[in-house]
Amino acid sequence: MFKNPIILKYTFVYFYLDERKTLVGGCREETLFALYRKVLGMYPTVLVIDADVKRSQQMGRLLTLTGYRPCLVTSPYDAFERVLHEGIFPQALFLSRPDLVTQPVMQRLLQRLFSRFSREIPLLLLPPEMPATVPLFADPSLQTFHRISQTSINVLEPLWKINSLSASSFRRSQQSLVLTALPKIGLHPRISREQRSRNSHFRRILQAAYESISNKQWNTLMTDVGLAHYASSENWPTDNDERMIPAASISYLNQAVAFSRPDDPEKQLRRWSEHATMLSLQKRRPSALTQQVLKFLPVERVMSTILNAFTKEMNEIRGEELHQWKKQLDGTYWLVHYSNLYAYGRIAALQPACHVWLASLERTFHLVGLDTTWEVTELECSCQTLTGHCLFAIQPRNKAAFH
Image (cartoon, rainbow, N blue to C red; front, side):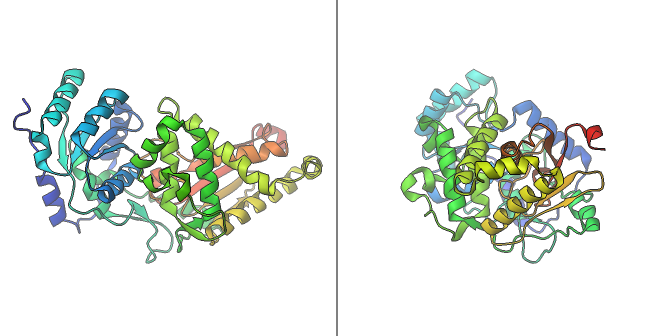
């Protein structure tokens, strides 16, 4: 059965010749993509066998940002070990060379997967070079939304074709609130020009992630998502205000945390966020007296104080005015994150994915006693709209009581 496996190389050839093809499509493809995710799980596993560490890390990042759970190994033997000990079920295998499939250990791996899951695992070839851009990036030539990277999308087209999907599943929403409604109330969209964040911020969330993920998982997860360099704390950035961290690195770390609890990634992300928020508040936490005073001030004044402090800190972390808020006529507060961290570069989410921001805001409200009367929801997520921006609503839990 596995003596002459078919390597789906031709699909790469076709899409390399057609890189200028524009994204088109309709609802049917999007529905298929959503159905595919529901059937296979939130993060379908893809196994990558490649001894080229640089290319492997790039592929891990690309798969991470497009909603997959990458597993990176350098040899068929290592692949067999991971399948054996972790019980993973890969939806496909990416190989660095066609001849890998002839190795005895690779034959054993394919036979084991077939006997366990009663189907052959598709084999795909990695491209010679990986694209330099993330799937959804802040293009300086655009003013209001992010651009979809055709070259990044094309790399994974063979993977999607296996399940009758296509690149046309990824289209920017034309009716996004951030692009249509917010400008009418004075919040005009913009994109990040620097695409960087502070070293100190990344070091803090790295520490929180390290303390939230088991030691057994840490090195593997950091490698799989393309952050192998940060697996050792010796390589963590210096705790200073320089902005050297690429925006996408925070998205990779977000997914590493999510992957660490496949049974409940949302709970794990919230736990991580709450821990990171408390580490941050250790430096800027208001005194007990200030917290008590805030509890007796009018809600509108307290909310303005919190949101002003929050957006000011985030804008300083980014070095750009990318976070704004506005109170609506019905008493709801809208908070927008342009070129949003934790979602930067990501696509293909089934539901709003910014659990980190929700937990962080809720923890902050808790300190001043607003968490029981106000709730935070994500109205729009860039992982779904593909605009690059995310919008949150802060509103009373019982609106009738506030009218």
